[in-house]
View 1 (cartoon, helix red, strand yellow):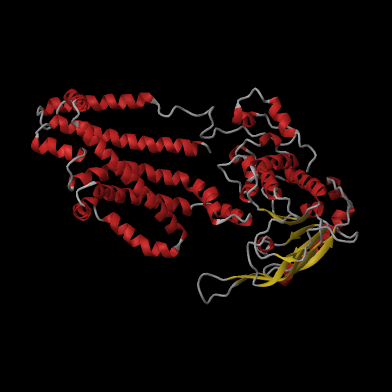
View 2: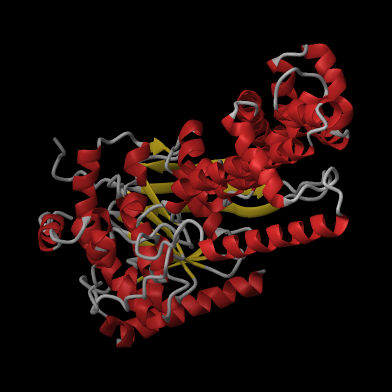
Length: 297
Length: 266
């Protein structure tokens, strides 16, 4: 066993010019030992990683969207039903510049962030327990499905009544809507963990905690992140629904204000755009986290 | 201090093992995988278990690795009972079972990590293990980037990480082509030579059993127990030429005859 302890040092010396951790993976494999397979591209391998997003399809899609919108606005000819894109853009910039949008957007952002974190945390825990315990599955899953089957719109006024007009009700509503997809994705991910790897861990006397951190979480991560992606966009929906059920601040409130009191339809559309951007930002945040976590594989 | 006559460590004794699996629906008869299996492997010996499909060979390895409690009988390693997984035993599964999100190096050091070794100690041990299985240049690769044979080498290195006294191998090379398989068997023998580990290897292949083993134990069909023992009295180190010798054909004939006998009994 101790025939050649110097080999790793020798190797690292010979590749000292190569860069860091990826040095070993580009070394040729001794041809006499084994036919060396062509290293297949792996997600996260720096040499094969593509830019986070390819820009041109996004630009094309956006241009098409704006043109269709403009045409529709001309055909409809009713500025209060469908204001033209440039009008909305102007109002969007104006509302941000004069400070109309910011306090509302900030309020909604806080609701989304707290609701997402709360819902995702409970979802992760519940999904794990359901996957690992038959008893918990039988106890919890009927209520889980029932809670999901009842539209959050129907539930929101009740929750607003219980938890008051403040932040708490929005976080609860937002959390509820995030909870389900994250719980289901976690359950599916944990259940699909290769039993062979669990047996390997058992044969190596891994503790429950070690099994969780070294096998279950890494194996279930792609599925969990898929659930978080869905949850991130739903979090925005939850916050707006919560605001509609009763609030004095937030983008949902601003939409109602613009429509019902101010008759400022461009502002309504500008608010919609802000909500959409908030949703996209949340989604991208999860995607970025995903690239970092799964990209390392 | 060991006396001069003290045996090498790694003596694995199974005494009258019975394993039965209860079917999920009550009332149905349990499946008896092993019944009355006894064997005695001395320290540093290589024993091959051979038998028809479903004779409980893999089940026996699980019992010996402490993953499965037998209904009756007991397993001891150097006179200490095996009731749970044990650092003195290394297990190699039929499939490599590498963690796909880890590099080869981090797969091999996985047992050390679980056992709480410091990164420095792990790195030192890793260098030895990579050298032992000839994967020095593959340390940074991920399992998907390697051939099946390289993956199984990594799995063997991982099983050896904690320097076990006994290595249990469950048809480790069954997915490799015949030529690679012979080469891997010779590599395994060299490895065993340098470490003195006791080896119990489950196999379907008569040539493989003859090439590596000191003794070949023929198991009966389910429920499995030892039906016959064939000694391979060939000197070590062994080479592939052994398989062309009269001794090998005699041993093969004897193993085949015993396998045929067990088939008739069933």
